[in-house]
Length: 207
Image (cartoon, rainbow, N blue to C red):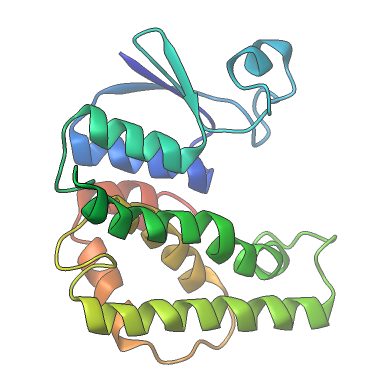
């Protein structure tokens, strides 16, 4: 059975768990990080030398980095609806996945830590305001793209891009600050809430 290492509250672990639901894959989850067993433990570092969650073990193979795991599982199950096999179609999905992990995530870290996690190390008001402004600007980019591309972020059908983007949108909705009007984001969020995996690991799975 597929083994998923990482605590259930982690947004990156929840990407993998949601993917498992979409694919109908049974899994065993093993707690690491987030106040459980530390990822600095030697036995965890044998799985992932960079000490980050999630990690999966699958038929003797070990993989880490959440977006890579999402792609791997979709490809392994030949779910061409989630990750197209042709280079152009796949790139349309992967460009959003790469943007999410490289750019989108960096907009919300400070404001999320300040207002939701209430981390005392993230209480500089100017940085909170700047982070929130960047986060909202990124969400407005997605709102315009959704208006143009159709129901989902990479086009008319649900793909792996929606798993990684959707969880960040859920996080945006958790910020207790005034938000801009984004009708296509609201429509998109309601659409995601129709999916069991998002209801379990997004809407109801934590922040």
